[in-house]
Image (tube, rainbow, N blue to C red):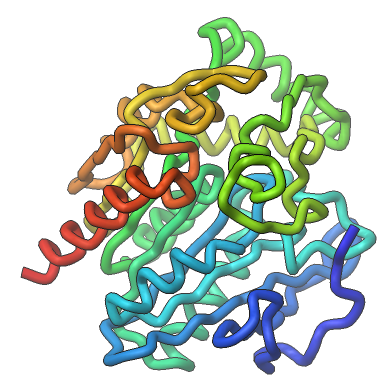
Length: 328
C-alpha cells in the first residue's frame, strides 16, 4: 500500500502528489488505540482575486484527487483546501486500519484544525464547505455540533450525493441495524460480508473506461473491508441526522436524477448513481438545515463532479448559479 513513511513538521507545506500548484501539510493528531494519527490538508490557491475559501471532504474508500474540482472553484475566486481525514489517502499510515472509526465525531479534531488554519492563519472570513458521500454525513454533524456550541462557522454548504441513510430493504435498515449495533460494540473490527463488484470505481478510472486517474492503493476498485464498528458508527450518525440537525448555513444538495443498482456493466453505470439511493438523499436532505436546495442532475454518477462531461458541466453550472444567488 502506498503510504507516506515520514511526514514534515505540522503546518509546513510541501509539494503535493497532484503537482503544482497543489501543496500539502500534515496535521498531527493525538494517538488513538492503533498508534500515531495524522490528517492532511491539501491547498490549491486561487489564480485570481480571492472570493473566500472552500474546504472539501471526501467520501468512504476515497481521498482528494479531483484536480478539476479545485480548478473550478479556483476560477470562481476561491482558495481551495481539501482534507484527507485520518486513515484515508495521504493520511493512511502503515499500522492503521484503513478508513476505520468508532464514532464519526473522531474526525472533529482535524476538521477543527483545518478550519482554524483556513480562517485564523490564512485569513479567510468566508468559507464554503463541500463534502461527498460519507463526508456528506460527517461534515453536517460536525457543523451542527459547532452551531450548538455557539459557532455557526460555514457560510454555505454543498453536499455531493451525501450518505444520509442505509440503502436497501426496510428489514436491513431496522433488524440489520440492530444486529450491527450489537456486533459492532463487541467485535468492532469484524468484517461485514458483502459483495463489491468494483464496477463503480472502474467507471471512474482511466484504465477501465473512465476519465480519471487515482491511486488504487488509496481507493481500491473493490473498496476496503467494511467493519462492524465502523458501520455501527455510521448508523448511529444516520439516526442523529434523522432526528433533525441544523448546520447553520444555506445548503445545496447535488445528486443524480436516478439510482440504478447493478454489479455488472450496463448503460446505467455511466449515467446513474449505482452506490446510493437518490430518493433517500432527497427524503432526508430537509433534516440538514432550515434552507436546503436539492438539485437532481440527469446522467450524474454517485460523485456528481466526476460524471460524464454533459452532466458534470450541468453540476458545475448549478453550483455556480447557486453561489451567485447567495451573493445577491
